[in-house]
Image 1 (cartoon, rainbow over the protein chains, first blue to last red):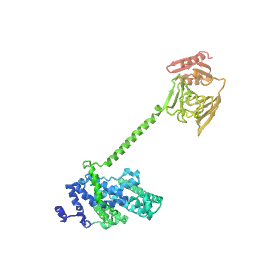
Image 2: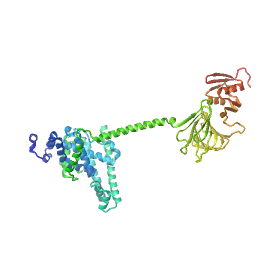
Image 3: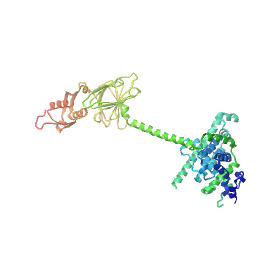
Image 4: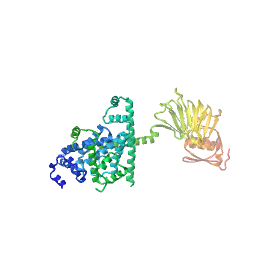
Length: 222
Length: 337
């Protein structure tokens, strides 16, 4: 049995990430993190470094789809690792590290969006410091997927210049004046493009919050 | 696998290309904790193939190390939630304390914000208000005015009267109004003048000596206004009925009570009984014969006893006094005036 071999001779496999058999053999999937887990047992800081290097890039990629800002993305992923480290979550975790991290950054990104676009909603944030072994509501996972799809759509349906302005402002962190200079357009135009993009996102978020309330009441009602 | 969920479907889902039916399948599939693990595994794989951002883990890890170096592992409690909680808690505490203080202050405002001048039964007192106006309060009367704003803020010469008082209002350089509010919502607005206000028994009687005043009183469907000239008197009953007349110049002015004088002109006995009740706190019982009597004359009395004594001498009536209650009756056999 291959799995048993992993356990007995971990040193044979240099990079568990490269296994790539997860599709055909989902049951073996957790062992892709075997080394990282082992490292956490012997030297937590070494384990953390492995974990960080293994997932950082992909976590950033998933978060930026929500927040459209490099700086915010890096902050969110960094904070999730900090919480993971400070709470010693690696000692209590029962899911894979990957599931924990992806779930945490997605929730945190969602909270950030709600906070940024709809500050009054800051009190009903979804906790991103959940019990590591709890099973997540499928509804919540799918809701975040739907939100992502709609954010993507909202930004894609912006006029192309507005889209560029928005991405330059958020993604590349350029100031309004810099964008105006680079695109050779009026400062006022830049502002109106950004205002428009943000307001359509805000509108989207408000609908999402409404849906979230509905599902909450649905859960209580059922 | 039992279900139709595979990596291709999930990738299509991440790209936003799943149909509502497929999403329903996913919802069911995600009930399983193992499938959730798989979901995040495929999500990572998809992100690897579709990177959105070129980030540098080395730089980020250095930053992360700096952050963890600052916080020892022992200080495991995350700081954010703690100060968040503390802020929310202290906010609510501060808010409730403030609300309590404001409520208590509001409920007790008559004690701390209003200055009350009151006279006892049988006591007549003159007061000079902060603006220089002089008020003479008849017995058993009460005048309230704002401790802070009286005369300092512009429309603020406002007093609340229960009972009877004479006002000698001074005129201010800024033509500030002086308002007397009475118990039955009648308002006397003054520029500077001398007048008497009596608010006893749900009636308000205003008698103007000098100057000009305006009366405002609630009529059935609006606020009525009435301007008085010197020598006018106006009587307002609780129902909003106004009666107006000229003071008989031969008659004594309405404020003889200032000198402890009581001046009656064909005044019915029940009215005198009310006067005794209002000014001296006595309950007067009259028999039916006496209730029809009218009294004319001027009496000088510092207290109820003196006044009752004067009446007894006038009518030759029987008096039975029991504490605060006085029974007046016509003697059965004796001749009546």
